[in-house]
Amino acid sequence: GENVEQHPSTLSVQEGDSAVIKCTYSDSASNYFPWYKQELGKRPQLIIDIRSNVGEKKDQRIAVTLNKTAKHFSLHITETQPEDSAVYFCAGGNYGQNFVFGPGTRLSVLP
Amino acid sequence: GAGVSQSPSNKVTEKGKDVELRCDPISGHTALYWYRQSLGQGLEFLIYFQGNSAPDKSGLPSDRFSAERTGGSVSTLTIQRTQQEDSAVYLCASSLELDHEQYFGPGTRLTVT
Image (cartoon, rainbow over all chains, first blue to last red):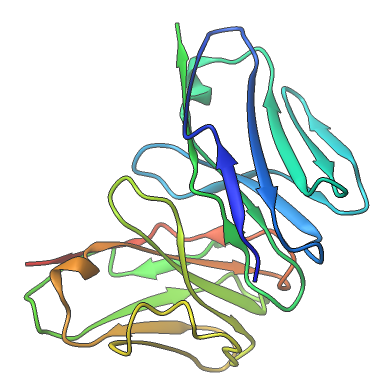
């Protein structure tokens, strides 16, 4: 089955700097990779996703890159703001199977 | 439109009692998932449904856990003879199809005393 690893487990950046979170997956058949943001005490919210036929996707300050050969994908947040502080989960999956989530990265944006 | 809803939002139960958690997915979503999130931990997959069928039950922590989905809509997660280690937030999510984005419900916080 799929196994998703995520690094780092914690990340602190200064406001305005960029943050990068990396995930690797094991199942080459996986074709869908979403990223979720979970603020303290709230439910996870989808912030961006990427499919295996796309190498990069961008939405304002957030971008995700996918390297299918190396089986890794990354979340990039530019110009970080205090409200970006949260736990971020990556996930991998494909049709007919469940998603597997990474263990999460706690991002702290310091003012 | 309405999102995923879960009930109850909070449940406190005594060790050894049975509990039933309910999830109402977004209308029209064929896939439904149950996850568990313990304090400070990540998301632990429990079970998913495609329609009313659950092809993979290997994520359920023990045989005290069971889940069903009827009519391709509402799902219930039942925990029998609850133990203190069952204390967690139980999250439900639904998606249009299995490889589509999952929308999470607010969760049920279960506390076993």
